[in-house]
Image 1: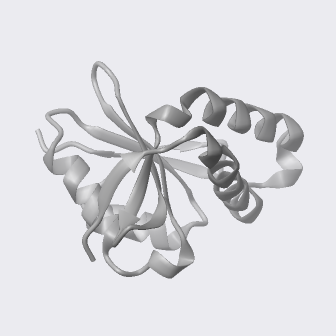
Image 2: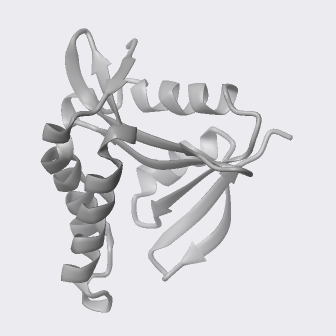
Length: 145
């Protein structure tokens, strides 16, 4: 399925926050974190960066959101969310491949360890686990150099 990217808007903040919260609720060890503080920080980051997010569009319908940050030594894939209707259709794979192909730097991301499907996808695309963070997330890197 083909996709296009368009700038996210301020009215997307709540949707992006909900998508983040759903992942935290599903995969984070809630008993080991300051849950309210984590959600406060997540919301603050989204509010501050919403104009850096891109809406993923498929046939004029919103399919999800992606946030890619270009840093001096790495491209950071911070968020990639697809609504359930658009999952398992190759859209996420296409987006990641496009990020990799258009980068002259390593591509880095964090993923919840228990998000087995995402971990498998990233490994299949050539990402390697380079660090475990707080026993709940992997930092993964794709480096074609």
